Length: 81
Image (cartoon, rainbow, N blue to C red; front, side, top):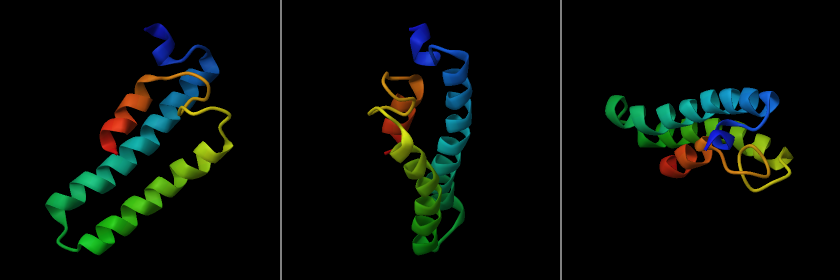
């Protein structure tokens, strides 16, 4: 279980930064549903936020957010998708 929090200090730091980005994506995707009637702008904002995450994932060497092993953020992201 502790490995899901990051195996190294560097991984834990990456997870903390990713958590902020994923939170921004979730906020853009969900809060706009309650505060904005313009669904098109909601989708555009969410895609813009997802672009940051997609750019990061292209550089990763594994199938998970942190790389070669699963972390708690993978489950959080799965729930968002």
